[in-house]
Image (tube, rainbow, N blue to C red):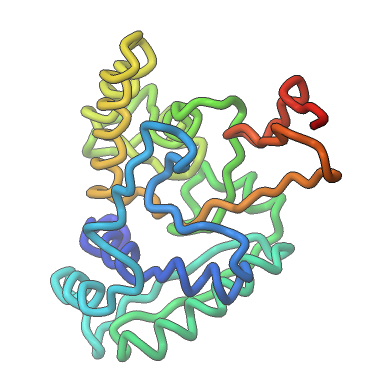
Length: 245
């Protein structure tokens, strides 16, 4: 079923980020409406307008369009690391939410698996859906795009057969996205680069190869009198800016 874009869009509409953040993360996160975090200038909330949060009516509409009903419900197997209490709590919450709100047109099947097996098998296409966290290697918006959507070989018919998107288990192939990834990597004009990155985010929100959920709030603490204590976008602490005052 997840090869139907309406089903993927329905999942995006079903997810209630504020509820998850409140119940599971105790408020220590912010809703994410793009794969590119908000502390990067090119980030746009591409998922917010078309799907919102906990949009039950839209979820039902899209699933009905995809051919599902109370008599023929859509079952979403949700795989996650069995060692993560956070993910286990989230899946349990979503299952309860779907059971209460969607009146039988959709169900969630929790699928815990040990981390070693999960990450060793992702690129084999075993898991139709799974929960992961992402931490960047360097402080640039490209590090939130290329590792998921770049592809060396494939087609829009077969999906990604070789490259980053296959390695991450997305198998996503979109010619316009590939061209835009190449463009933004080469573009020296930041405004034009931002436009390319914004367009990528719009396409991802339309095609829904993944759904961003939250970005964690990070904190740095210091004694009284310390100034300029800040965290950069990749959680580095620029100590050369820190001073006493």
